[in-house]
Picture 1 (tube, rainbow, N blue to C red):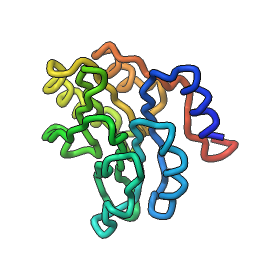
Picture 2: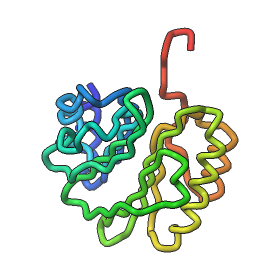
Picture 3: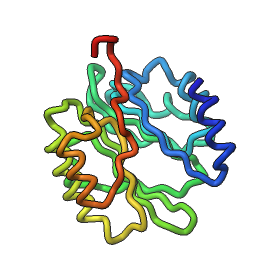
Picture 4: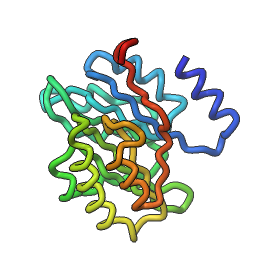
Length: 189
């Protein structure tokens, strides 16, 4: 169903670059499934809450047509990021001293002769969104003059209209593409 939706969108907009995020809730035994989803359709894919540690080699997560994934590991019990970029897109991992206290990947990509700054992040607790936003602001302020476009995406564990998220978007003239909750744990929630 997801693949059909993506394919349909891309057929209508074949010049688009597709950037996506999915909270995978442990990626360890799902590599074949995710390969099928992203291999032919997605250009940049972030998986959050990968639940990996250094005992899992990156070679275990290689997908044809994509560069080796960028990783931020926490533990097998929670957290973590895995970021895939189509191997045709020039990419560079950036160091980010402002992001050392949060789960975040900062990369530079070159698309159509423009430099893009891409932030992939995971915020494990709703109560931490203000702290995460603060670190992101410092980092964006540091890098923004060097880039034509900035994309921030990931699992914020925040409602679309929470004050810290709205303030962050307003400060940088960004638009939150998520307009309603995307996580549904039960019919009552």
